[in-house]
Image (tube, rainbow, N blue to C red; front, top):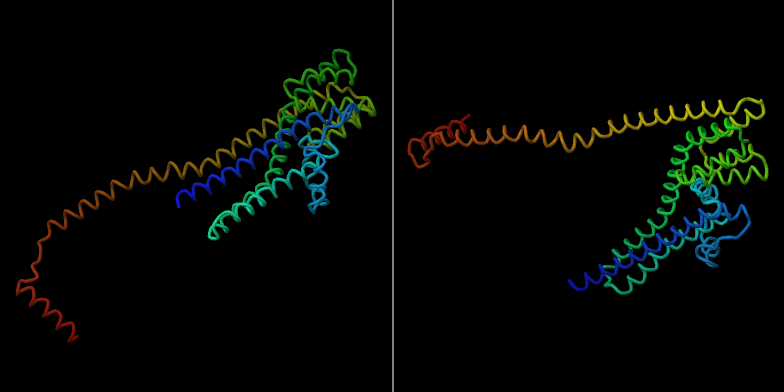
Length: 328
């Protein structure tokens, strides 16, 4: 019995390990593809290979819900930096593999285990399939949130450096190229976006490039920057003063958000404080009183005279009270 349980546990650990390795390897390759795709497709040098090769389109089209994923998942993929035209197909193919792999593994395992263990195997397969369905979207959401946070931190620095480059006498496009090179090591995700902005500005114009950046990032700060630069160019205002005011406003907003997060953190810290500090403190305060009460109660019991039920006087007393109660 013990050996069979060890065999089933080892099998489950093996299936989970294969599931985890497949998930990590696919998304690591997907991340590398997402970082390289914008620069490669913008210059037209090469096209990145599909993650699962020729099976990618088959796996992506074999599962229903493509229209819903195009409306809900595709904006999140773009926000996370997956700009490939085939990013949605790769996402759907990865999700399909991660959903059906534990299901097939559970079916194969159910053929090897006794019938009494089949419900547990089926439950494990369903849990892993649910994780395979939800983990890709969670990964994309977290990656997009981290990317937006980095851009939010880098925007004030970008505005200050761009205004300094303009004050030095450079043109707006040249200053944008110089600032992009300077930010490449500090804010790599933002530098990647600025590379795309520079290339689109060379092909079209700077206003369209910043509007496209705002649509990709889905951030209000970037959209405000795009509107500000557009208005300054249309009305002929000084861009450097507007950029400095924009950077100051961003820093004030970031400070206010940090203060708000700090106040919310102090509120949420009340619950673990009550749970882990106040309850033990209450136990330490009340416990000595309870122990003292029990000790005094025991002493009082010992101090009372013990009654001997074999005493004739006591037996007559109980009989008399019993008869009186019956008479009443």
